[in-house]
Image 1 (cartoon, rainbow over the protein chains, first blue to last red):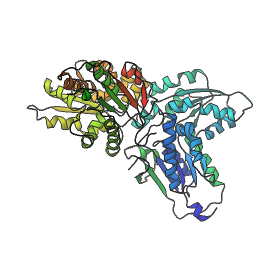
Image 2: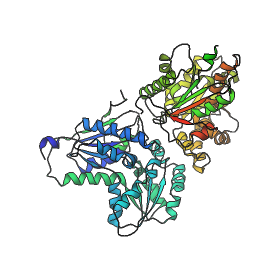
Image 3: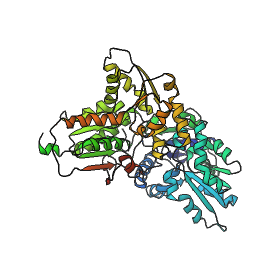
Image 4: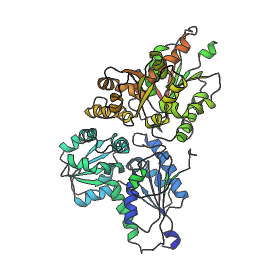
Length: 269
Length: 269
């Protein structure tokens, strides 16, 4: 790996600010690497949109990262991974590795040999059946039963900052009731936002292993770079772009101060 | 008015499907008129976005209606009215009248001589101060106190169909607590979706007059046409376009069957 390659950033993108939690994890795990984030906050949420629309938006976001010479792409959004990953791959040169948020979460299920799991996510992620398909693809030696539940209200609740409101536990309890009855061993938080509700979910499902899809994906990206010789860089750069600048909680999601810039691409000006 | 003018549709647009409730009202009030609806469901909700982004989206929607020769435009969205109405006017020829959803609701307040009112809406609508500005502009002879509250979770709850969930009353109660303490005489439902929560809101504020901004605007449009000589048309046409076709509740919002078509414009294809 040459020094010039080293100075290329790792690109991370999401429909909104949920992926900033994965960026935060990545920033901790890879203190030397330049990072570049894009959140499509002008069109968030993707979770109830059609596949055709999500594919268009995801390819536009990917081109934005490619134009900025990223060396690696983390698709930090379950909805995009679920319906548009193949279409993102089509426009990315083979030298640039793409990590998504579904495979790393399923890796944990396979490693721990869980046989009954739950998956929660946006409507589009759940309807796509992507987690079930990824599990089938692995040809497990034992049967794995997957219980899924779409939870469209959880992202708005988290973006409103109402994680501890009395209504939130009632809403989460309703969403998790079938999964709870199924007696799952693990629950995949199949949306990067949901880690903010981990405490509430764990209270309802105390003995269930919660698998945070965003955090697991960040670990995989970090492993790819930590196995390479460490190149000490005098200072690393983290750039953060959003297509609309109204997300009050972006800084809180990220956890450290970064100047947030407006992304100009496609229909945005 | 010539017959050819009569055959031009009345255009209605909204960020999503909330405006279909106003369209439904309009269809009842004007059984002879052709109606054309556009909902920007590929980019809904507008309510937490920046003014710059909303203006761009609203002008794109307006051009879509103008390209289809509408004779009248109902801006059936409080958020668009609040931040982009002037920018919509800039691109509409003076012969085409524009009705918004803020002025008709304020008309009711002035007519009833209310002195303490509440307004609930999306974050952007409330932050714009548009209702307060419209009330100031009327130069009331008596002081009118306006209590406002942004309610970002109500649109997602309604789109999830959870109007009667136990959590919903808790959420609405939290949002309305300051308005309830202020002892308002009337509450403007400053988002077209909110009419679906009228029962819950009325339960919390039993003696308060609820003013439905979408329904009031539909009445104003209807008055403009009902004062003109009635032209009996053999059959009227209602066309409904959405920028994305995944809104399960569209048909329910509208209340009668209509073929919903995909709108192709701007960045959409």
